[in-house]
Length: 264
Image (cartoon, rainbow, N blue to C red; front, side, top):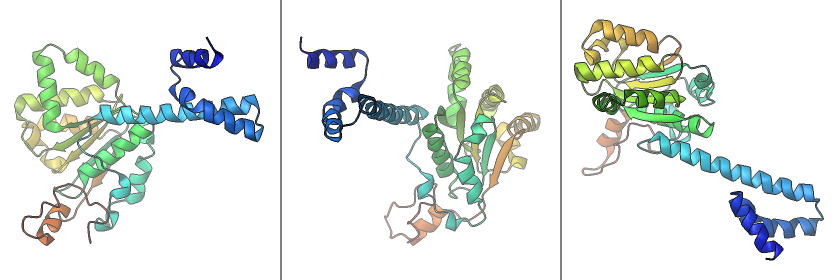
């Protein structure tokens, strides 16, 4: 067996795919530059590490189950002058997750709450955090099914292994008594061990409409706001404004996000 064949075999065994694909060309390049063996190995290792990190980010984003691709770079902060852009960008650094702090976006439909939630979640994935996105109704359903199948322990273990849980659209659809209880139990399990990000169209004073129990709503708000960053986003629905400007039959503006450039 030649040394070249043996080297390829070893690289496959060690699961170093980028080493395998890059070393011939890089070896020639280093030879032309009269680079040292150490420099050759360093360059290969750097490329392997970078490729693994890219794949890890892709995997974390995929596992987060985001419903759409939304980025902060595409968010047009100019349509919401009262929104603290600097604080949003600061959150994108992810320090709130390390501190187990929560984030709440409040405001009417169409002002970009979902966009911000997804964008911050994707940034968290890029910085190594494990994230999971749910709608409020989807999470309540998942918790109910876990209880029916006696798998609540597995769901709780899942929460422990996430760094950030995003709960979108809280308040848009009534949860019912059991759904509210399930959601309360879930958020209680996250308390001080997993960061929670919530978007809601209702102010805190009206959350008793969601949970149908003022005491339950109060207890949940107390846990959620213990250490929290709250954004009360006020403004006209960007989707509605876009829809009113669009020709009849134009489907544009269906997204809860003031995307940059769509203002025309």
